[in-house]
Length: 30
Image (cartoon, rainbow, N blue to C red; front, side, top):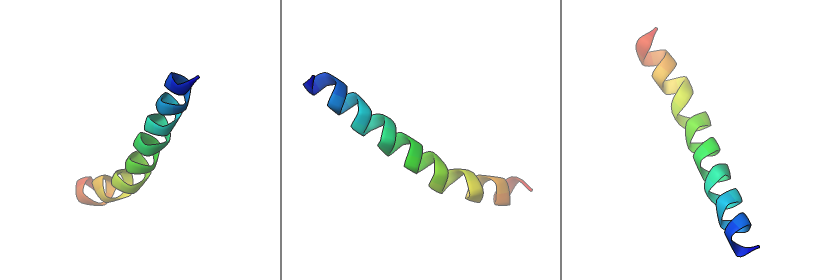
């Protein structure tokens, strides 16, 4: 149970980082 909670936390963290990083990467590339 604790593992699932930790996994969910990291997935959420990673997703928010991607959402923050993706627009700037697109802006730099485009």
